[in-house]
Length: 337
Ligand SMILES: Nc1ncnc2c1ncn2[C@@H]1O[C@H](COP(=O)(O)OP(=O)(O)OP(=O)(O)O)[C@@H](O)[C@H]1O
Ligand SMILES: [Mg+2]
Image (cartoon, rainbow, N blue to C red; front, side, top):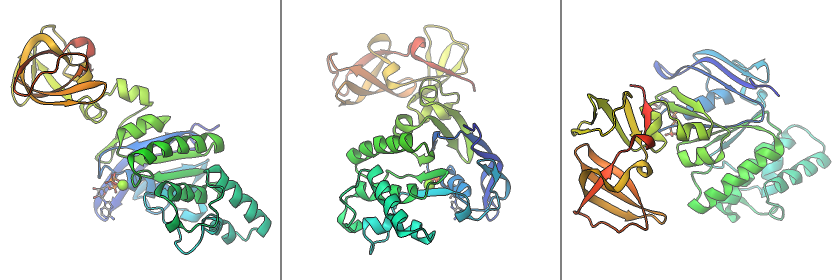
């Protein structure tokens, strides 16, 4: 298995004079499921379009399976595409939607039949062959769109926000489906999402992007526990981020003396890492909401708003009341400036 199955080298992508993605470098291994994660406008779709051959790079190189495809036409690259809008043919039934690409390859009818039925089965749609897309649910249409790409046996499958049109429950089901199909086919998958939970749940590796650049690459476990920058920490749920200066935590709103010294430049806490109910600091409760396994508080402190999760067994504190809290070093993530 190749470690550099998809290789992007110094890839610069522009729209006219505007550079959307400057000098991107990324290697994707064969059979890997990689998530491109990042806020709106950070260059996720642009990067996918370049890999697919829909956007010629300004400079740099794209290699797929050892071949330089930088100037190769999209349909020669062995890429499958699945988009947020399923782009199915409305007048064709499920079978014909999946068979469409195979028929273009002048394959025998028997082989089209066999491969189409196998593709439909792979995504769990057996029995739906005669349905038109409009007679199928969102999740079923999404799976049909996946089958249509898979039967072409792409080297790489690119999925751009494939689950964002689905309701919350279907989205969870489709996460598992996509992972299963990926495991069973072994196809290299790159999928785009701006949903950190989706990336953490599905990916072997996450590429976090920020303003056209790669901010951090790592396994979900890595990124979740060890974000390396304030941007990464914030994006992955460390909602309380403060600078450290002269033994105090500092924000735009003010400062709070630290009980234990730290030589970190920046410290970040998840809401779950903030201690509430006891501690050396006090603040007024601005908001309190029940979240099943815990209660979420917004506390007005000398540092501005702090988000803190309290165990649900603890006595609830009313909005407007004062609550004690601590930002303990042992639950903090230290970051460089
Ligand atoms: N056709 C275009 N012409 C000019 N600028 C574009 C074009 N498409 C995208 N851009 C710009 O390029 C940058 C990256 O856009 P891109 O679509 O890659 O973002 P994204 O990460 O996919 O965002 P989203 O999560 O909103 O889909 C943005 O600043 C965007 O405004
Ligand atoms: Mg996009």
